[in-house]
Amino acid sequence: MLLAGDEFGRTQGGNNNAYCQDNEISWLDWTLVERNQALLRFVQKMTALRVRYPILRRNRFLTGANDEELEVKDLTWVNASGSEMRDVDWQDGGMRCFGMLMDGRARPTGLRQRGTEATMLLVLNAHHELVKFTLPACPGGDRWQLLLDTNIADSEPESSFASGARYGITGRSLRLFALSA
Image (tube, rainbow, N blue to C red; front, side, top):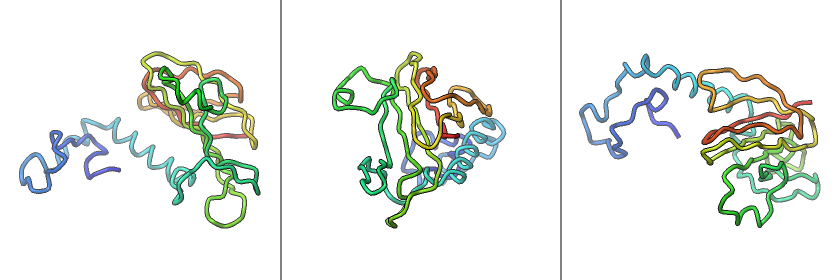
C-alpha cells in the first residue's frame, strides 16, 4: 500500500499517525521527487508490472489447493532446488530463499474455466549471501524471462533463462520472472 509521497521517499519522519500534524511532518516535500528519481522509477515499474500481469492483482486469494478438474495449483511454494516445498522445508530455520510460483492456468475467478494469464515466479532471498536458485520446470513454457531484479538499481533486466538453470539470487533481494515458451 502506498500513501501520497511514498513513491518518492516521503517518510513523515517515521510518524504513522500524522493526520493531525499541520507542519513539515505531514506536508509533501516536492523536492524529494528530484532527489529520489530512482525510487520513483522503481515504483512506476512496479505499477506497470501490476497492470501488465493480472495474476499480480487477482481479487481472489491464492490458496495452493489442487484444482482436480484442471489439474493445477494456483500457487506452489518452491525451494532453492526448484522443487515444491515440503513440510521439512518449512521447518528448516536456516531456509532463507524460496519462490512463489503463481500458475496462470489456474482459475482467475469462480467460473469453471482454465486461466489464460502469465505464470509468474517470485523469488525472495532473505539471506545475506548469494543463493543459487534452480528455476523450476513448469507446464506451458520452458524459459523464465527476468522482469525485475531489486539488486540491479534503475535497470531494465531482459534476460531469459531455461527451466532447470541455476540463477544467483543476491542477498536480501527479490526477483520476478514470467514463464515463456
